[in-house]
Image (cartoon, rainbow, N blue to C red; front, side, top):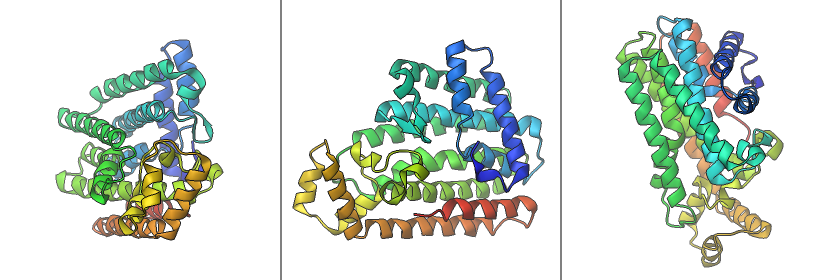
Length: 322
């Protein structure tokens, strides 16, 4: 597990239990699948979504026997979407390690992703209300629609800021919001508080994804954990480029972007275009707006240890170095 939670031992210890639950779920699977999944689980990054399930649950009647399996299910859902994303993107590296499809082939990766989806819903069926199971299903549907929309809009120079925001709301923010909401709801926080926490998750998710998209232009590969400018290579135009095209309809750049295959010199020119036209700075400003919305919602919560943890974690997460 990522070192992100080392200063929050209460959450870290609960996440260690979540990992054990996931490991137990795959114990009786095919040996090849089990070994692949064990490696994936043990290289599971920050585990933000299960942590948010746990953290939001602590605003209510926290029952770890109920919440931890739910957190594990949410993480398995997230893992499944990552496996399928990597297949679609033909990604070779994730979290500084070869992706499943790169190491074992696309067929294995499809099976692994499907297996994770099935285990997620089996785990949910024993630990969540029917109402929230429906919400999870709707979020999965929304994520899929977001991915389809992204795929269909590749190399589209006419993509708008609104198109982009809808896409990341579906791809990223929806699952962040769900993680907060179900953790709170299943801990008897009440609908009003659960919705506030869900809104916090949504705004954190929006800011988080925008920051990720900025880091695709400005980050360091060994820190980000995957090749930089990967979205551009896939023809996925994110906010920094969309802002830049909105400001400057440079004909040569538009012709370049329509090529649908870029060499390294092309990538360099695109990055320079984005920097010169303020795409990175404007994107940072929008990320700041969503960050402020998240903190405004957090300020509505009653003072408590979980609120303090949430303040610290949100700051650490959303004030990352660009």
